[in-house]
Image 1: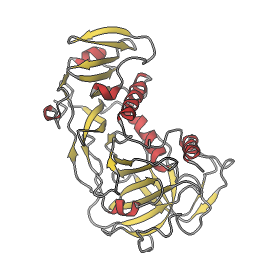
Image 2 (image 1 turned 120 degrees about the horizontal axis):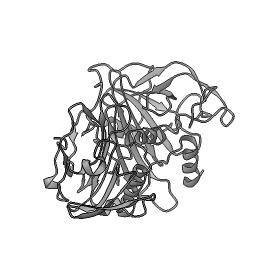
Image 3 (image 1 turned 60 degrees about the vertical axis):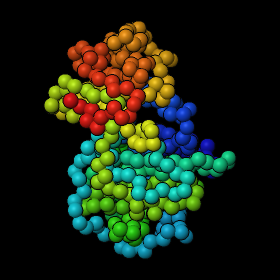
Image 4 (image 1 turned 90 degrees about the vertical axis):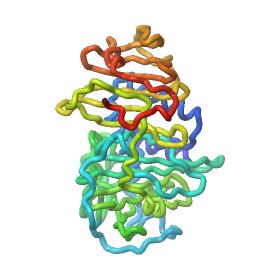
Length: 388
């Protein structure tokens, strides 16, 4: 199965794209336009991130494989001693993460890899990291995805059958894939996405002693995935897209509790104390992870709220070709457009930055802009405390 066919297969299985394979300015612009179009289409940031998480991290795990006794990575150069299932000891995993900080980072990456923009926003129950490397002509993509989940988000199960007799939307049905009995699985809660039980087999312990498990891959896919308990009741998952996997070493060197606070190019004032950050988007700028995107809503409300995206104009793609009926506006001397009866606003260049905001509150998008203080393109002026 070539790369194109494999990508198409993942899209059919989980209705999302696998991580992109290259890192350059053109890709960054494309991603920026995609984010903007998603918002103009009315898709909330948090739910979009949850769907991406399932597709990017677990598309391989939901499908049965012909293997019966072990993963498709036998002979791996970083072998681990296989033991029976057991639980992690020591401290309890945190019950939630701060979306304004990065909880987990890579402590080691293979030669040629570097940290890139995570495809998912940081949320209270999941912390994301991603790395990529260039690819040679005709080869598979080379990407590493990491997800660390808060406490109580995953449970190791006993024997189960996959696919289930009644499959939720986005999960392969038995008429397409033969049902198979697995001796153990990992059941995780992925927000609004379907709960999926993933087939796992013991992978012994990582170098730091954490119990680890292989997630069984697609028969033909160059996917290698490992899950481990980084603390009591806390799970992490690392997945490698590409040949010659070194995923065990990557997993063993993951740094937890880094609490690396993101620097944002803006400050938002006047937000009620009862509101909370649902998600925070991060990307690489100036060689380090920074924040650009925030989604907030009242703690008692599960819908609506406000969304803010501020980033360098070169990464965003501007406000053109966004579709729908727009109205030209000027804010603080900068030209832009509004849409959906003024609930959304896009300013192509405000104090040297691209700005998009969305608000279903009184005053709409322009009212929200009056509470937004753009700090300009110089990273030295950005803040780790974007609220207040």
